[in-house]
Image 1 (cartoon, rainbow, N blue to C red):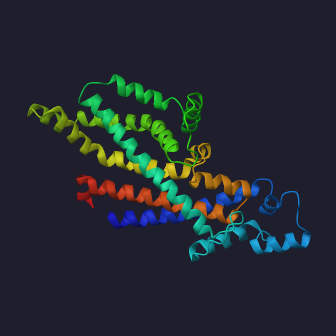
Image 2 (cartoon, rainbow, N blue to C red):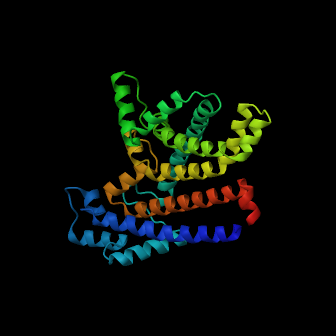
Image 3 (tube, rainbow, N blue to C red):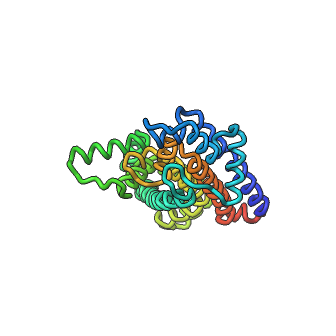
Length: 299
């Protein structure tokens, strides 16, 4: 099972990479304008200069040929040079990726700890009203709306806003994500509490704190799979949050690349995110098998 899982993960990652890079490139080409127009603005170059630039960028070839060329560059390690930033694509993407990874890891860890604390209050201390209220409030608005709301509150209270800092986007992602993941964890724990082994622990007189820890250990493999998926979503889908707070991550990079029609960066972005998402999904599956003795025994 283990090696088949690895093989399936690699195959999925390869297919996801091809599809994602092709879709991103085609969507960008469907938008009005091109990188030459964006770069030169009103002072457009002569026809000869435009043709020379198009030939250098490969824009004079059919769309399918452009995609094939970029696929070749991806797998040969030649990701090209950014049209807008005038830097190697790998350098541009790597800087943004580090920022997004930092945001993703911190948001995931803090959200998980908050959800465990809320579940502890509900399951071990019978304080269900507060966790339910926090979860309902968190789930009441999407992430982007929470970002705007936090910005508005800071503006009304005249608190300083650190644009480009990690504090505000991190707060937004934690606040918006707590409700969903608390409900997932709470549902898993409620199911665990109905299992016979929990009844046996209760009959043995085990404390509620220890029973909670036993149940948490039981549901942790499934919950961690969800957490890893969440980490991938933060990297790929935090565009609105990063744009609101001008956080220099992968989401903001995608918006900049789209607005400038920076096709090499778009392809590099799609390739990087596809690899990370596929890797996270594969790691979460492996972690699930490792932490669940029932699955480990069948492998």
